[in-house]
Length: 208
Image (cartoon, rainbow, N blue to C red; front, side):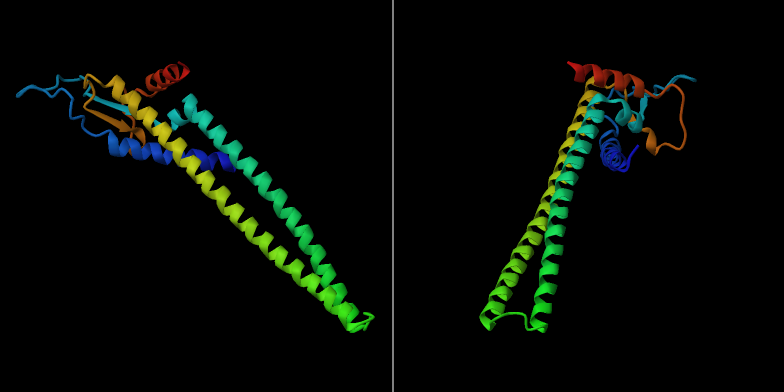
């Protein structure tokens, strides 16, 4: 997995982890045991566990969001790189012109003072143009960065809302009193992991 993909998935993963930590607490609509009722020996508690890493890796929405964000990032970098190279080439040409002007001044090569001042004004104007282009490049860099971050936030929110909505659906009857993210658990407990069921359900709903 390349660096860009790792960055994107880390961001999405962090958001989903936050979602499970903050949202999936005790369900206020869950059915609570009656007074004196005790869980039978060996029965599973009304708790479920999901693996957010697996959801990110196999949920079609998450995969497509990652691909879309990665493609957008790559396109932005190509655009920025092209402009930066063009600016660098123009700046190097300007430096050569400045050095050539200085050599002519030192060698008294100009036929008149007016001619030398005219060339100097041209170089000064060119310098101002390059400074303006440099600022434009910096503004573009910031714009692309902000746009990328906004898209990250939007896609992360979309993914979080989708997962949260689906888990609300499957737990509408309050069957699970608690749904945990496996990232917060020290060890796995057999019988509680519903990750595969959640992924299948999410993908089936997304396909519609």
